[in-house]
Image (cartoon, rainbow, N blue to C red):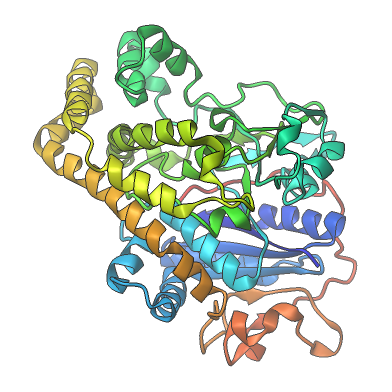
Length: 491
């Protein structure tokens, strides 16, 4: 039976999201016969976590859906044991990179990757909770339908399950390594207000993520495309393309990767940096691995927290650090694009040592380009006034620190990539749930109380029998489209 990990990282209340992503898990189990590990990585506060736990405990999931709801203490326990088993150098630093105190979009997904390896999953399918799934004629449009149709097949075998193929036959023996789509609705980055206040400043700021040597025309085109996803048109009918998927056409709220991708190279673990979790999209594309781009786009919306003063300041910091990270990522991306298929070995597997080497090389890039970025942001935000001017004041005092952090982030990515093979290997033989497995694991009922295959020691630890809750499913087999919406929750 195919075993997959459908994951929802969150640091906010999202009970509705947890209810509804369960419907997608049911769809995967019911339509594809998959064993679905629904992994909720929950960094929310005590009250929100308790509410989430109640939702999970009361859910009546389909057979072969097992829900793992882990708080940060449980996640840290698993990571400590896996890191210790790996024998990797600098274990304390690795633990901090995997579960930092600050927000890290890459780190939360890296935790899902290692836990998926521990669970024996062949793929990871990520969703977030600040958006909803589309609905057509009363049926929810689940992205996982396209993901499980194609992911892991050779390109030659996947061709029959898509609307069109735009892929050279030379790639037909390679596996479909990524299946994804984008979003409709709000911009993925909350900067629409800036555009309304001053479109010229919007252009000046957004163009900062381009390589500095790009022409004005290239920068203008980038600004027009940036953060807009798939526009606003609603879903009408399925469309899917087998191709080398352009990273600008997919979003991490609507993505799936084959294990041969995420078990080879992790995501950058940078903290307080939007876009840090998009690296593997570029690597799959530049490494000439096939993918499928479909149109089951997720509907993006903003949470109320971003509208508060504190939320605004935190978000602008993440936005600024995104621009600073591009000094290093543009260096890496240009060289990955030039390397092409050389990023793969003879068995079409990614070469992590090449990625780590490029990351280390990039760390030596001249910071003058980033000094310029900070100057443009500070000057532009002062002109915008209000809260933007207040944020500009923080840049004036923290500029040097942010430059140091950006360089350290890419150096840490190199270090994590070098240790990743040993971490993945160790995770495969590390119990997700330690000695006390009585909380956080929920699955369907089985006759006579027997536990399914996932209740092995390697998954749940020595006391698994008390911790695998399998609520009754009589009459509860999922009907496709029974849900009206699935929310996403960005970490």
